Amino acid sequence: MSVKVMISDDHVLIREGIKQLLEFDGEIEIIAEANDGVECLSILNHTLPDVLFLDINMPKKNGIEVLEEIRKKKIPVKVLILTVHNEIDYLVKAVDIGVDGYLLKNTGSAELKKAIKTVIKGESYIQPDLIPSLNSKLITRNNNREKIEALTRRELEVLILVASGMFNKEIAEEMKISERTVKNHISSIFKKIDVADRTQAAVFAIKNNLVEL
Image (cartoon, rainbow, N blue to C red):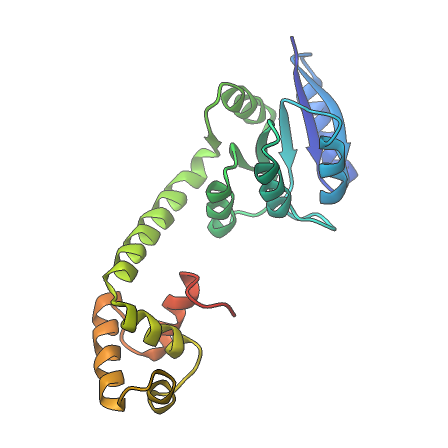
């Protein structure tokens, strides 16, 4: 029995190319195609493939938003992101949401088919040359989480205000504490998160989603 696949990508030539690569030996059948994220979710309401190939850059709803919606609605489809993006942050975000696989568009047909067979078995498939960067990013994030957990509640409040651009006097007024206490908190914060100045502290807070830009 063939594996039923859907392709969601806003480039017709990309969809046609993937279709030709996958359907060549008859083991895989392309049962649906979508041009944008909204159309993809609409099709999934009445057509359920075994595997969905999902691009990140799509109009109306991008691939990450579509993946979030699929997981939120608990649609039982294996999702393989196929993208030009090799930025590790996209991969980490997709993994956090629960993607089944992640590949770049420069991959060949053999790897595409291997990824399909892998996720169908309930396993995940990340393109091998992306794994070292992914592991490095996850280790860094885990280390950062430990640093954040080492901060006291007051220190975390101060860090967030520093990242928001407040000076010591403003922080003191906001928190109703002395400037000396603020300075002590900031000194402790710098040591715990291993930064040298306010700019680095702000970058740390932003990268770890403690504040929004």
